[in-house]
Structure formats: structure tokens, C-alpha cells
Length: 45
Image (tube, rainbow, N blue to C red; front, side, top):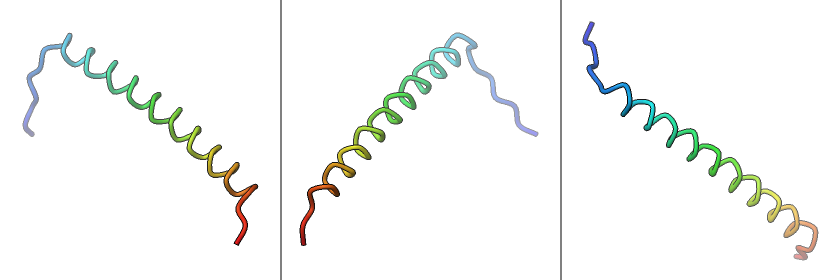
């Protein structure tokens, strides 16, 4: 089985950035969902 060789500090930094990205994505998704709800409350066909 192939093994990856990486700098542990680089991996920690990448993991922290990925965690931050996921948090931002979660927050943006929540805001977008709230906007869709508000739009649905006022939408008229």
C-alpha cells in the first residue's frame, strides 16, 4: 500500500483551513436557506 509523506505542520495548517472553510460554507448555507424562506413567505405566482 502506498504511503504519503507530508510535513505534519503543513497538514495541521491545511486541516485548520479546511475546518474554517467548512464553517464558512455552513454559515453561508444557513443564510441562503433563511433568504429562501423569506422569499417563499412573500412569493406570489
